[in-house]
Amino acid sequence: MTAPASDPGTPPLILAIESSCDETAAAVLDGPDSLRSSVVHSQVDIHRQYGGVVPELASRNHILAIDTVVADALQQAGAAFQDLRGVAVTAGPGLTGALLVGSEYAKAIAFSLDIPLVGINHLEGHLRAAALGTTPGFAPLTFPCVALLVSGGHTSIVHAEHPGVYTEVGRTLDDAAGECWDKVSKELGLGYPGGAIIDKLARDGNPAAIDMPRPMLHKGGDHFSFSGLKTYVLYHLREHGRPTGQDLHDLAASFQEAACEVLVKKTLRVARRLNVKDIVVSGGVACNRRLREMVLDAAGRRGLRVCIPPPSLCTDNAAMIGAAAYPRLARHIAGGAGFAEHTMNVSASWAVDDPPPEAVRTAAWDGPPL
Ligand code: KG4
Ligand code: ZN
Image (cartoon, rainbow, N blue to C red; front, side, top):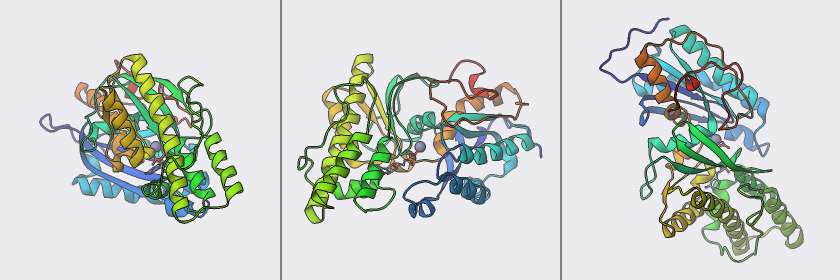
């Protein structure tokens, strides 16, 4: 299969694939901020019965879903494989087996069409999701910025000086914040994933009802710790029993207040120290109503702007991978530099400010960052 020569008048179409955890996703873009389609197949119903993601099941179900997900993304974009000029895929961090399904699929497409391939860091994807849109009332994505990337697998504060130039300033030393929401929900017998459930309950609760700890608020530098907060809730339940009625709403609101306060205060502290005026919040936990409200309020009082993508772009998706990849692929396409090497590794623990995993030959590190 060979892709026809690019028509210089039309922006190149790229395909992006994401499979780092339990969402199989594909998207087609015709610009860094121009999305033609985005399809997300969630495995949450499969993992719910185990109370969390089972890596082996995630890989198997990515294999079952990926063909249909990619076909749907192409069809919704009104495109065929032959129209593609580049392919992007999440190369880490994430579950190794799950990452391999997406990366092998992407390699096969790039190899058969002889088009460039780029491996994208999942956290960079969460950050650059903001290029595709912000929530009404929030600011657009602007560099330099300080990004709070907060999901079920990650909690990091990243200083993004330019697109492609990142420093991870802080991270969680134990559980990710989203994991904490999920575990509290599980302890309360409310199901998985717990973020949205707790968020909804908290709306009718009193956030000051229970004085929850604010873990590492005044120590640990820019790092976070969430396992102590989870344990506090567990001991509270052992002592008082599982709450019902208004007590349940109050517990949800009190827990959420503590977790959000630490996330927001630490992020704003970094922004102040680095003299950065723009804040980005992204990742699944960025859907949280209280977190959005608190960061907007606190940032507004300090004259800072906040960008938060709409919820569908905060949770895992492939559009964000395409947004991060587009400038890099476009440069290769414009330069006519074909990409001969279709070998690419994945890395379960690829930090956002590290070079891509050993032996990765991608467009990303060939030239100045974008
Ligand atoms: O970004 P994401 O889809 O996947 C990962 O990369 O982990 O994030 C999923 C996480 C889950 O832990 C889920 O409970 C959490 O995001 N989440 C929320 C909310 N919606 C999703 N946490 C708090 N409040 C929410 N409204
Ligand atoms: Zn994610």
